[in-house]
Length: 293
Image (cartoon, rainbow, N blue to C red; front, top):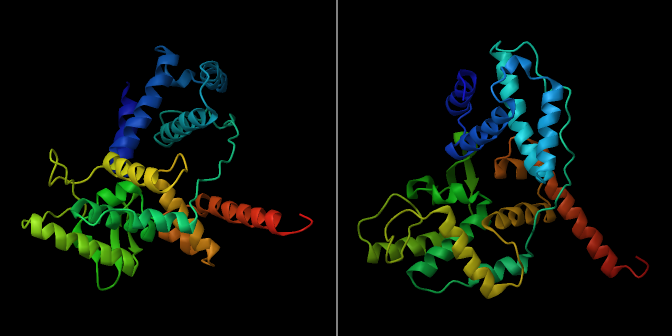
């Protein structure tokens, strides 16, 4: 890859504070585009070249969401090139992204969440799992934020967690008493079996990885296990608890701006998807209950 692309990736890392995972995604998307260029200089990229790239992705049978993500990476890259005066104008300015269908997030009923949170056993791993699930639902944090959480970032007196979110931005998440009680119970049990306390809040207690910080994948496996026990619902992930957190708050009267801050969304438009979920539920309730619906 050429110098401007490497400089762009450095910019994402140093100035935008993007995670290694996000930067790797940008890198792969740029590599695909550079293969299409086949050695042609960037100044020769026109809207026709970009449209050829769009046509090639459509011919591959890629989803609109994948195409839109790759185009977003290109837009960011070419805006950077114009800013750095490598190019005079952005060839993507006149090219539209494919329209995406808005998918409503999967949301669990409050009763489903309650069954899920009560399902872990009362041993060390079970106490950890209950504390973990309670924390996800109580705060609405992302699973990456959960596994990165340290004990000293949980303020048991004030009832808040200090979370490192996307772009290495720190925010405060209120956490409920029930979640705090389950965390205390887990830490007390852990101290008896592991007197030397790790700084990480949630640890792996399996035979092979005992004492190490829990990973995203491990949290997903834990959730899959309890979903299988308590629900017939499919496609439930740790993010489903985040969706449920936001929707349940709105259903009970929270305002959209507060929910945006709690979720750590930069733009209010990202949070607005949950108002559609709430209104959809109202329509379903109306259709079931009204005699002439």
